Length: 295
Image (cartoon, rainbow, N blue to C red; front, top):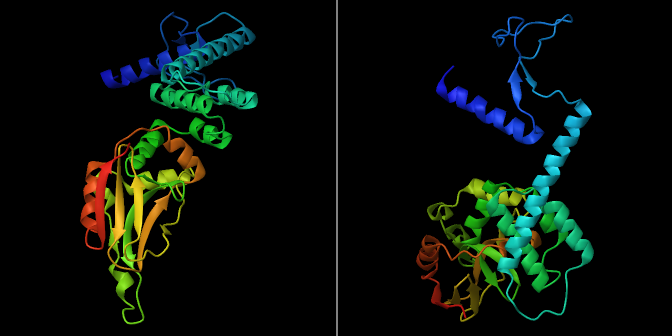
């Protein structure tokens, strides 16, 4: 047995003991030595080489496993609640979260032991305490089933997302085109697109958020912009005002769903620097761009 495979078996044994509360042990032969070859039982089935090392009856073992689970869940809940207290500012608030919402929150977050995910849960509770109704039960259910990899994909995409106050929504700008006139029917084929791959975002990251119903699956287009019309996009600490130089310009973007909007509020991530440069390079031909700090 190699050192690597031996370590894997040790790791697995540790996992089993942490789940059950009892160690796993290799079955010994009649000579008192551990068995090396798996044998067959009277019905032709393979006899196990390992067993749980406990003389307690199975009901007692089941109760211990349940106790360990309850302890772990309690530890998770207490950690999340303590983190929420750290995040919560000392400000005036006249409202409280709905009692049923709190009960659902506890039931959905209790199995989260990953530290980064616990932080997201804590921020949700803080946000709901400050402004009840901010986070829906659907958002809580989505977060419960999210993996760390999926949360990382959301964080990457939030660094590209901007907020449009007029639509009260977050979206990822993809590019634009000039709507063709009767004398220029081929103009739409000259669409200017931002290469998101250069920002560190992969298309599988985008698909992951679509599968989680955090992004709408179809690319969305803005209303047609007229010459001189302005549109302001807000990022975390900066915002940019786009002023159309000519008419018939149409922006394209991926829009966050309501659940995506809610969960994106948990992530304070500045605009991706490469993405900012891509916006400047792609839009400067047809738009006047003005960047300034968010107040």
